[in-house]
Length: 368
Image 1 (tube, rainbow, N blue to C red):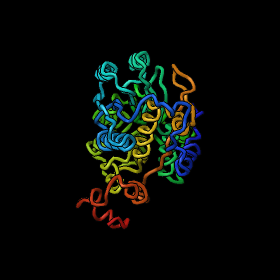
Image 2: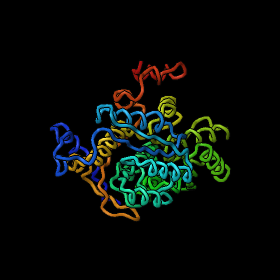
Image 3: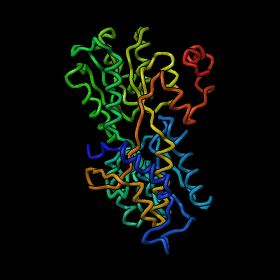
Image 4: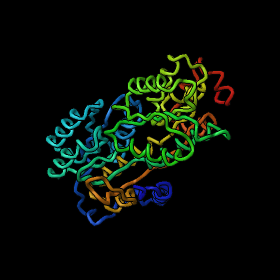
């Protein structure tokens, strides 16, 4: 799926178009009589709560944008599956039964949800895949360049090992859930950086992305390899990185190896400050959520010019080819750029990060 590798350039084009007013254009072949007005219902299905981003950022940002775009006439029908694929299938079916106008779906299990996507399609309800590329007749997709995420994580981890990097250095890989297609792309991106440079001593696919499962997997790796023989840990996201840190501490490790992450969770930003986690990948949730809302409203209102401007890339799923897509760029988050990323973008305020425990570390970086 390296057809999606040009995400930064394409996103830049979208931003330029927005500056010129194209993304707010109302012209399309259907504009004289849009399919729907502002009184619309947008279904939003998010996958889980273990990762704090969904409840803290994605849902409220998405909802606010829909309301702005519709003059507060639009409604968001929201459901979170709490990592239960069967529950999400029922939630999607309920939205189909309720005749929502469009569904934005972040799948728990991209393959299992395909039948539900087909049912929505049969009912005339467009489905936009959000963050994870669900199977079935998806109308559009918005996410980040997932292989690029893995590349950024892998490259950062290698840089953390310095000039003494060797093929004999043992890395533990804590990959995401096997039911999440993004996890495979993160892994592929990281492996493209690791190949021929380090040894992958243990690799795990972590059920449901749960930190406790990552902690158990890490304990297994420590028992098999010995903590002193683990040079670094690739963690696909921040929640799992927290579980990995707990396992290492439980094994008596006081000087933690470099550990990666993703999502820029507050706890991870604080671990980075404290030297317990080397880096995270910052992804602009406001940009992703707001663009998804724009895509959903444009789709259901028949505003083709706006929709096309938002989806200038194409991706393939196992079931559907040439899906219109937007891919949002990412940034490696380290100690050095906390102020320029999550603080500058308003994700967190300095007092949120720099609690008493982290005040000295913040002062060293001029965050206070």
